[in-house]
Image (cartoon, rainbow, N blue to C red):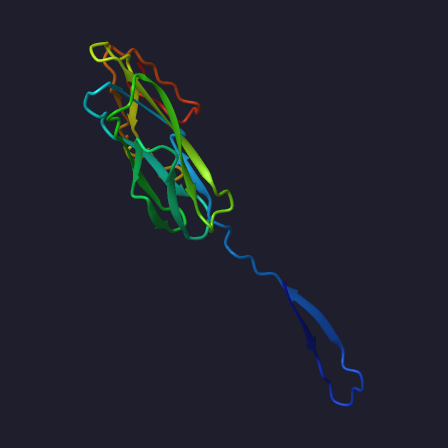
Length: 193
């Protein structure tokens, strides 16, 4: 907040009147880290090929720019890019890759932490799970989503925005049955199962 005094002077006045004024200036809100999805899952056979990479969207939902770094908690996990900069409202896709060579059959869990000195909610993290099965054992079904870009913009009273695609993949070894539901009346999915 800035303060000042306005003084009005008239001829012959010994004590000119003054008015104290103030003005408030608001800076932009700080950067905010947003991750979607909050968990991502993989599966593979022992000694087999590594699973296909997955994607996580990192977005700055705040009002200031931020620089960020990704920190993996396990050696079998990598994220690319590992660092970057995002302006207000900007986003980027993080590619999550698995290197499961030498891992014994088991269920593994790790996290990827996103750190930014500019973000008010730093650090934030998403979970990564990996199921390694015995060679020759069919892997269970495993759902994976390709988020693409699901942001929409519409004008009040205007036409609806164009539809967008969300890709559902089964990266497991058995048949996957799935359903999808929305939590807003202005949103619809087709197909939903």
